[in-house]
Structure formats: structure tokens, C-alpha cells
Length: 254
Image (cartoon, rainbow, N blue to C red; front, side):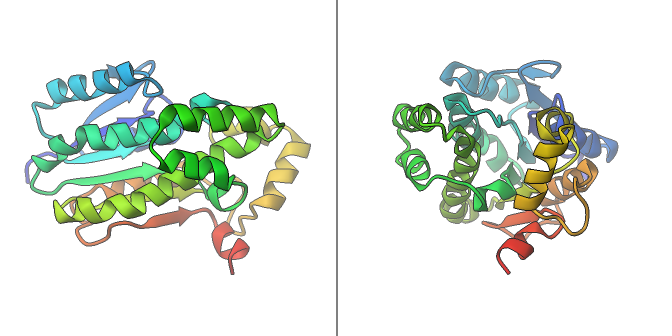
């Protein structure tokens, strides 16, 4: 079978790097995208960066990609988190959709988060779903200014989930399965520096997002699941939010 070509955003570190490595180890061609240390350099929090990504991937791929893994994201209490996690991810998916359509077996997946079911703000979620980026950014700033900045990240991911569930129907009509993987807490450098290395913060997160299988979880488990969702074998699943979280979602929503 002809070698598959994949695009991975956020490929310079963490889940994105692990997924790109996993796909490359299978013999696939992988176009790595990030703001540094990547084949395509683009800031997906900006319109210019989104346009640049599409243009450069088009050139690097020869006009066809078989799979897209949209990992790039931030977890900061900032409007940049909404601009990247929600609007940047959607722009990536929609911008590269024509390149996927040129494949005989196209697949796409976005990275969500378990936190979307724990601490999201409905107002910010609805602001995102109006597709007015400046209004959503203003809602994020208001949360930060009110001392609720921690809700920005999970809200961006819940909004992404809801958009994806609706968009997947249209994508399916074009023959493109579109899904999301929602990891729990996994052992990345960002997680370690943000809270895992702080015993008090670690305990708080573990209590809010209990993971019976392991806390934190292994990054490779997420990478292999993402790789499967964009592989040729995934021919019949679409519109799903797959919780790879060590049992946390089942615990919290039993």
C-alpha cells in the first residue's frame, strides 16, 4: 500500500512529538508542525499563522494528506488558549480538509481533554460556538479578570468537542472520519512543570480527576490511540470523543 502522509500539529513536544514519532516509526511520512523545531513553523493562535500552515503543508505534501492529528494547544489562563485550542484547531481542520479529500482513506483527529467535563464555563463555551473569535477572546479575558482563569482551558476543549460532534456529520458525508481523543493527566514535561512536581497541586488534580489505572498516565498510550484513529483501519468511527484517561471519565460520570 502506498505510504500514508500525516500532519501533526504541536509536534515539537509532549503528546504531539510522541504521536509524530509513533507514526514515523510505522514508515509513514510525517509533516511536523509547531512554533519551533518542526518542518512547518506556524503560530496557530493567529490568522496569519493558520494561513501559513495550510500553504506550507500543501507544498510539503504535494497536495494530499491521509491523516491529520491536531494536537497544538495551550493550557494558560489567557485568551491565547481560546485562540489556539478552539479557533486555531478548527482553522487547521477546515484549512487542510481539501488535502484530506484528495486521499483515498482520509482521517482526522483533534486532541481534547478530560478537563472539559470537570471545570468548563458555559458562557465561554457558547461564546466560542458563535464562531466570533474576538468575542470569545473577550469572554476569556473576563474570566481571567474575575479570578476564574483556570476555566479557560477546559472551556476551549468543551467548545471543541461540541463543534466536532456537529462538524463530523458533514465530514462523514465527504468520507472523512473526524474524531477527538480526550486524555486525562499524562506524564508530559508541561504537566510536570505545571503541577505534577508540586505535591499539593498534584494532590488537588488527582482528586478532581481520579485515574484508577495510573496517575499520571503514559504519553505513549495517547500517541498510539491518536495514530490508530488516523490510520486506514479506522474506517467506520466518526464524531466520537474518546476518553483515554485511566478511568477518570467513568469514575466522574458513572
